Image (cartoon, rainbow, N blue to C red):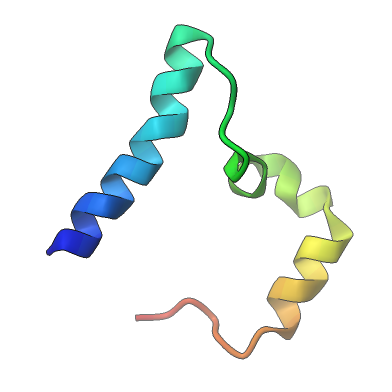
Length: 54
């Protein structure tokens, strides 16, 4: 259950920063829609053995 609380906090942080006009955290770029234009990131994700399925 603790994993879910931590992930909720991690997801809430960029949202809260956006609301108050704060700086984005360093990991926010890979969560944005712009990630699909990052060829290096897309190549890395496509070559990964894990597909993120639970």
